[in-house]
Structure formats: C-alpha cells, structure tokens
Image 1: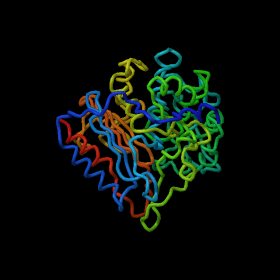
Image 2: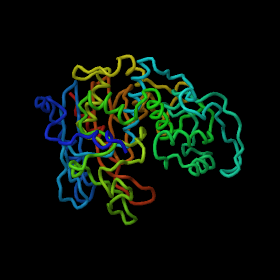
Image 3: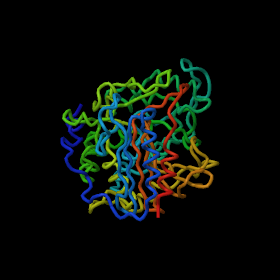
Length: 415
C-alpha cells in the first residue's frame, strides 16, 4: 500500500470543506417532510443513520445527519462522518479519464489494447462450459468508450452470462494485488457479447480504465486522484483508506440477517473500518468519502467542470459525460430502467415521466452498493446526496429502499 493511499484522507476534520455556511434563507419550509421521513427511516426499527445534503443554485440549502453511526446506536451520526461510497467512485474515475482526454493523451475511441497488453484479439464465448468454452473472435475491438459505458461485453450477470461469469470467477481478477495484475487477469476473460451490442453493468471495465489512467499518467491511480482531483477540490476526507486518527468517524457497515435484524456486514472494511476496500486502488468502488466532499465534486460537475476558481474539466466535456451514450442500442437504456440511458460515469434520465418519480430529463447520477446515492440536475441547478451504510440482501426481510422517497421529497421542496 502506498503512502498516498494512507494519507489521502485529511488527518483532521475540524473544518468543513465548504467555506460558506448552510444557506439560511431558502424560500421553502417543505424540507420538514424530508426531515420527518429520514428521522423515521433511521429510528430504532430502521437504518442506523444517514447524512443528506442538498445544494440549489450553488448554495447548500439542507445538510443534516440522522440516527447513529454505530451498530450499538450510541454515537449520533455527524454531518462529517465518513462512508464507503463504493460505485460512486466510478464517476470520479470517469472524470480522471476525461481530464486525460482533454490533454490529448488518449481518445475515447482508442482500443484498450493501445494501453494494456493482451486485449488485441478479444474473444466472445458462444457456448460450451466455463471449463471448455466455445469461443469466436469479437466483431470489433474493445474501446475505452465501451469500457466507460459498460458496453464492452464482459460478463455482467445478464441472462445467458452464467458460464462466462463462472469462467471469469475462476480467473478471479478481483483477487489481484494491484491494477496491473487486474488488467493482466482480465486479458484472459472471454466476453459474453460483442462490444457495443448491449449494456451490461460491471466493475471490471472501470478497473481497467483506472489502470489506463496509471499507464498514461505514469503514476499510481490513487496519486493521480489525490493530486489532480481531491487536493484541488479540497476533498479532504476522500481516499482509498482513512488515517487511524480519523477512523472513529467511519460509519458502521450493516447488512440484514435471516431474522431481519441489522448485523455487521461480513467484509474486511466492516470489521476494520477505514482499511482499504480492495487490495488495489479500485476505480470501480474503492473510495471513502463524506457528504461534504462529494458535494464539492458534484457541484464541480454541475458548474461545468469548475469550483472555487479550480477548473478540472471544460464545460463541453461535462456535457459529454451527462449525455446518453447508449444511442447504438434499441432501446437506448440500461438494464435497470427503461427511462434511463447512461453517460460517462452515471445514468442519464431520458424519460422522467416513465421513470415515475420527480426529476428532470437530463438528470445525472449514480449510487453505491452500501446505500449511497447522488444526483445532479442541470435543469434545476440541483445536487442531492444521501449516504447510508447498509448492504441489502436478497431473500430476507429487508429495510425499505430509501432513494426514491428521498429524491421525491427533495424535488417537492424546491421553490
């Protein structure tokens, strides 16, 4: 583990990353409905706790902590507590890639084989078994664009992927010690579909993009993020691990047992809060962060790539990120919603009415496995973030999902 991985989270948190206080004159009292809902969602029968943050027209208009951060429900949640944001990391990785695109150091249409060995002749699994696959050459190369948009064709848990997934699990790229080894193992993975033929959400594609960032920038991925994104944006509590002095701020990670009770999740980071989520700097899901830090990152995107005088991306690059890139598909949507396409780093709402919740066409965002959520709405000049720490389970009596009610309550609060 590098020193940067251990030090990339601020050693003290006695100041907010926001210089301005929460706006006190927001012209609505309707946030009370949101507060009541989250207070109830984090009561003795609900989630341990949550932090929500809403920004409107560049100002924080609501930022609250609810419930507790520990399984014993003894420590009240604080606004600056630290969460495992898992797949919300993907948007950060996508920004890193777009920065290199702007610098002319790579192109989205480049084949991944230009940067990583072993990907010059991808194969598609068309039959057989994990042990004895039937393969054919892929119809086209895997591009960086395909990796970023989850259209590369890697096994992704879709119907028909079972044997390809089993073969991938045998190669075990996620057991790698670093991103170099991850990419080497992935070079032996058979695709489940031709590149560009389907959307199949997977983490492996974004891990490969993190490795591309390392190769092109000639520095470890964690160092690139710290120097080029976190430090400039004053994201003081964001990184792949948490310093020992700050680990009491890491929220307990829960799951649900067979009796419907909250228990500590069976992960290393749940047992040892603040330790890295992966052996490597995972661009797909390895970051810890806070609501305040991620709000700075999201507001930078909403502003067209700039915040507090720091310009990370151009306005046109952000527009490209927030456009639907699945136009080659019919329909041009993800596997999760027939009202959402996918941009670079997050979903893009293409039919707000069909989606069935308050929001806007062009709204952009993503979530993390442990119940963390964010959205950016350029039309409403809105950023909304909700952070919890719970890994849902299939087949047990689970807590109600909170993202849809949360977003509805945020939008009904707008003037």
